[in-house]
Amino acid sequence: MTQRQEIRLALPSKGRLAEESLELLSNAGMEIYKPNPRQYQASIPMLPGVTVLFQRAGDIALSVHDGTVDFGITGWDVVAEKSANGEVLPLYRELGFGHCSLNVIVPENWADTRGMSDLIKKQKQLNRPLRVATMFPNLTERFFKAQGLEEIHLISAEGTLEIAPTIGYSDLIVDLVSSGTTLQANRLRPLDDGEIVASQACLIANRAALKSRPEVLAVARQLIEFIVACLRAKDNLAVFANMRGESPQAIAARMYTQDVIGGLQGPTISPVVNSQAGDWYAVHIVVRKDQLAKAIAELRSTGGSGVVVTPVTYIFEEEPQAYTEMLAALQMQNAE
Image 1 (tube, rainbow, N blue to C red):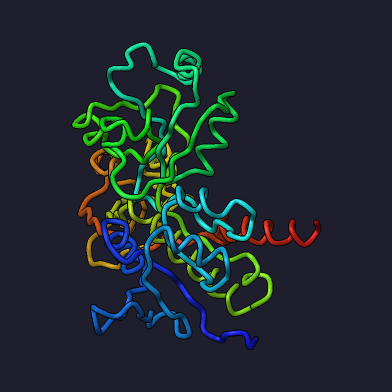
Image 2 (tube, rainbow, N blue to C red; image 1 turned 180 degrees about the vertical axis):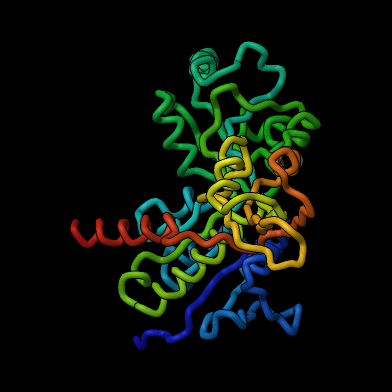
């Protein structure tokens, strides 16, 4: 079979996960070009040669796993469920959206069942396997087995699970929880120690494609570089101020006595050319958004004036840790 030349990136086709995936890529400079909204195919002008496909979140994990797609953005929950043999390599586990958790959930009227140990007692009282409805049979079975509860009957289910215990379809469910509002409305609650997986959107790749196709590896680096730089910048602001002082070193020494205006690796200080008497310098620092008020107060207390604040689009590292970890993971498999 002839190896395909195009590089494929799969994105969620609908829902909040789809919207926030597009927003992330757009903010990272990799805006999706999709002239026909009905098409399930698009492109990224910044990444020529990359074809974007739109799929269900669960199908993305399978497509990356079997190699029909090279990259994907989907929830970690479906990756953990459907790709446990190492064919899928996580490139970045925490994209910052799509937060939820996979939990063991029981009816509210099971008042004496608060944790997994209580669930074992419940199973013994019933004197039969517990019926568990879930869309995550692999994760569920492994978790229950690890907790010492193997007497279960897994019921594969699609769609709404919350009604299953009420109608007697199952005794309990294992499902994703975000706000918990739906559980409360259906008189259900998660067990105190019943979290199986904490999940959010992640960037994944096919391990074999990364190893065998240099062009895929190059795209992996660009995806990681720009996504990580965008995420690092998201919570930061660039702050500029004018400050009078004997020298850049003297100004920096004053700034280092403060808590938050030291910058990422120290302030950038350069001369200001003007007609006023005295030595004026321009100071440039990057601060977290939640520290802006304190940063402005500290700049003023050390002689700063004319403070200007602007958003930060990217903060690039010398070498993204995620890329280094990806290379290490590929080399480890080669060694094996």
